[in-house]
Length: 362
Image (cartoon, rainbow, N blue to C red; front, side, top):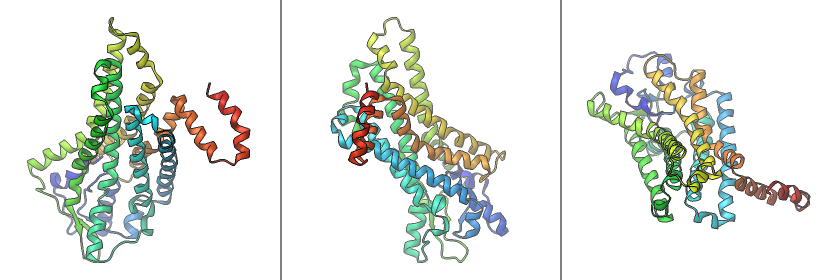
């Protein structure tokens, strides 16, 4: 998703002398779920957004954002109303994931490259321009949250692995204090992987552009190797590690003659199934965009094509899927969702719906 960061350094794409149409196409590459674009210049004009952002895409991103905000806010309220749930390590991680998904949706719906487009108040002065280019247009924090969410899911998978295969070490490895440390680590690590984008973009005072990129050591071996490392560690590594942990968990439990009945029960348990479903959805949502960008770099696909927009939207759609996964795979979450929804209804409706909720919760 972020591998286009080093294309400029690899291929040394010149910007001078390009036609306006060519520059617009180069600028459009910034819509490719990358923290840094392949072009050297970004313009904030109708032409730029016509080449990438359309009303249909704005509607899609808006829908994803609204569903993500509503669903994950309801998940957060589950823990607000029942704080005892946070005594469980996996619930702390689920809460962190829900907060990250809400923040992702808020940035998505307020970002000029996804929803607002020309409605965004673009800066004109150098001070606000620098803030806009480095903080907003670079998309560093949008994609930091995507990477952060992937690592939280990785820790959730590791939590299930210890619960099933290493129960005697579980309380030591996944006590609440350590879980908080894992969350902090995920935040710092995700920023370390995406944060360098803040240093390679700056405000431009020219009439035809707002932001321009200055790449660090373009074309050098160090830069190429660093970029490859970042690309792998952002999403490919956590996804592969998640797959490996679940395969090992299933094979070890089913084939081992000494596996306890408790371990087998935990493997089949609703919490393991729920986290497994969330992990699967993460992989399904982010991998297509990774594959697409590989084809893009190989010259076999085009940015802003229909497949590209599908892959991009699918990546962000992961932020709104988890609440549905929790509700469908875990009856405890499903019942609490209903209680929250009913608490928002008028008293008359709540009285009429008391019986159905009791029946369904048995």
